Image 1 (cartoon, rainbow, N blue to C red):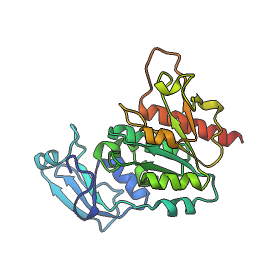
Image 2: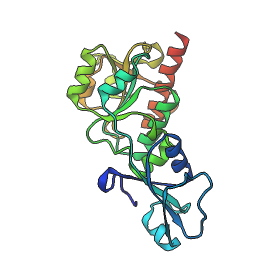
Image 3: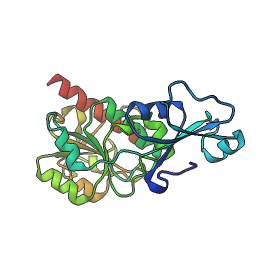
Length: 253
């Protein structure tokens, strides 16, 4: 369990009552439940699930939380394909979030949770982004990862989406080089961007931001003005604010 995103056979390890209950609520197949010897099986566990008891010492040694709850499980995670995801949601105007080379699992998990909260169609990740099944990403998502479509994509797939009418918006910091008045494609205030049509919001790496290739691919650069004395917003905060703004505009329209 410790530090593992995927285990043999494609299984994923989860820990704690909240994630296990969310997995069951989402209809995911649970292979095995591990219990600390001090616990009785929770009444909400379905009958017939394989239960394995571990000593407290052994349980604590295989999970990566400081204060284990004494319950963990192995499950088979959902798998998604981008085209199938978009096809199944054609009754709604697509809203995608692109996590480009995000390395902090807490940021990715939080963005997945925000994507579900604000009705995003899917979260797309690029090469270099941490796995959504990282234990910290799982916990930060609070179970949303079991329901939100998360798909790794290539640059070619993003170009194809753009050719199909998807507008790509690149999030940049207010004080970045790309916000210069003389820079080409200068960014606009997110509230003035039209996010009501099919669009994808691109959030870059925590330190380096979006790559030059992704910035060049964007139809528009958007920014969240910050009157306070900070250089930039946390990636998860910025992405969540952008998703909220897109949701607000769509509800108003």
